[in-house]
Length: 231
Image (cartoon, rainbow, N blue to C red):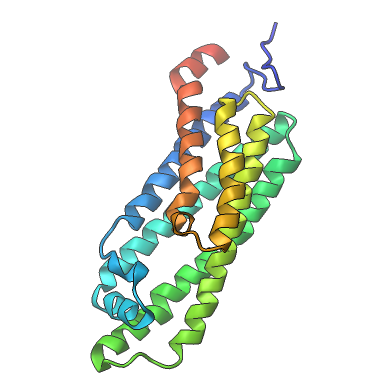
């Protein structure tokens, strides 16, 4: 007979192979994103706008590298979440995973637009600032718009984490504490980001719960055990 988990995950389902893949994709996405976030220079993230532009203008290659890592990490995370959403839906969890993915998807579109602005208009403004010593007047309002798109992404991403956390709590996919961590981390993170609590401001925080979920999926559904189970 088939073995069924205590809240609906079929422990002999081919979906288990997708869970293993999801684990690696989510963990890889987080690592790539963190590589970008940890790449120098660092001071621009906490500098006034003119100093920020000067740093960007002097480190063109680094700026491209950082944001290339951001985009690749984000796309890997989106891919992993899409597979996770489908497998959770097949296991009976429909609403929360779909809400989570929809929120993260639309937030990611805004984040990518903000990144595109950073590596084009902001970089050009940075080069002009370095050359002239004067910040272009046109950059400040556009910088605020870019910041608004980023802020919307962050709030949607935190709420998406909460949605996936709730979905995990309702299954035996991984340890229940991980689902509760995602649920509370996402809700608290959304609120504290809005009130400008600094710990929840960096986008690298978004990938922390996804990395934990990915790691736990890899541990619970190792590829070699899955293949022997599914024969």
